[in-house]
Image 1 (cartoon, rainbow, N blue to C red):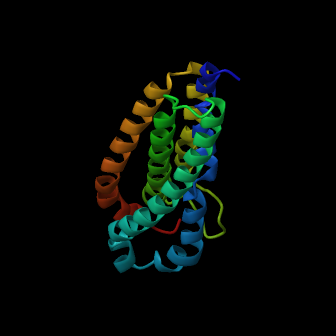
Image 2: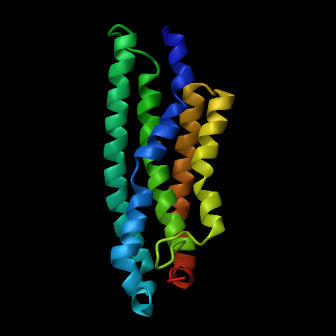
Length: 183
């Protein structure tokens, strides 16, 4: 494989991080074992922003570790292909995986707090949740078809992660009190 061919596999990092991050599983576990019995009480729903911040910090830490692990494995592969010399795709790979860790952490928790998609029998009842949760797959497909340059994809994802992260706290603060309840 030539080094120029490495660039066409970079969009697969989106798919890998979508599958490896643990936001969806955490939200299901939190709903089932923590939030379901407490969502009926207004004092618990009132502090949804505080819960969101604590959970986001914990989830970010875990997903960043996952992203760093994936970036390290990919770096070894890139260095092997580059025969031990520095390759310009190393930095975009690291930044892309870490930005995706932020996006998928914020994404799952934000949808959970704003849409609260689960019913007591653990089915997903909110069509908006299903549609918005599919954006990761759509993003991968767009990146795969468009084949952007590694730096272009990395900067786009990094800016998206920054906007998503900054907008999450005000959105949860404003809307979660009324929407974070058992359906």
